[in-house]
Image (cartoon, rainbow, N blue to C red; front, top):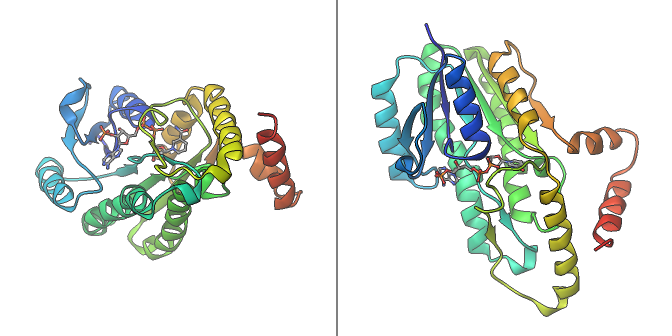
Length: 264
Ligand SMILES: NC(=O)c1ccc[n+]([C@@H]2O[C@H](COP(=O)([O-])OP(=O)(O)OC[C@H]3O[C@@H](n4cnc5c(N)ncnc54)[C@H](OP(=O)(O)O)[C@@H]3O)[C@@H](O)[C@H]2O)c1
């Protein structure tokens, strides 16, 4: 029997590529988008806004009509709230959590009874390098991704007896639509003008030089197939930072970031 894989946020970026690859490899793929009609895809697409409770309910009603088994859920949907912490409103921060953290948790909760009943499954969630450490201008985004790490670390223990594997993937910067779909802090505080300009130039440079998402897709394909995947799977340039942090202090990481920002 074909394995069934559900991928949230399959209309662009990592989600679209991995959904297409898995479909081409013979998996039964179901993707989601807030606006499923907006692009033509070779796999089944359902409407879902993970930040909206009634959308989650109608989505799961549709989903359970379609499937008798669910092998893998890839929690990929999310967006980037960019900006200095003090210039970001609490409302913007809450909305970031409503999607990246609570939306991901709510989809997981919606599907857990199904996974528990079948006594197997795998939940792969896309975190971020900013969920393991963080950079300026990503306070709420990084906080939402740190929160996912903490949540799933606990859940992983709890689901062992049901043979449900919990996995995180933590990409560094890769070229997707994430910058075009990002939301920016609405506030402007003059005191930060010089620093903000430097940080924005630093971030722009990082994203312009970001690689295509090949390594993330390769890692996701491995994890879909893996029998006993490990919890944390960082991918990309951040790997060398994480490795260096085993030998050098966090302070040396901060110094390297400050030095890099001061180049601009
Ligand atoms: N690219 C990077 O450098 C990078 C690095 C680390 C982590 N990530 C993470 O990777 C994941 C995918 O991002 P991406 O880089 O591929 O960005 P992307 O190209 O902008 O794709 C984001 C996807 O998420 C969906 N989405 C956004 N808000 C949603 C909501 N409220 N409900 C349902 N779906 C929603 C979008 O679908 P619709 O607009 O069609 O609904 C879209 O398909 C995100 O969780 C992101 O935080 C990305």
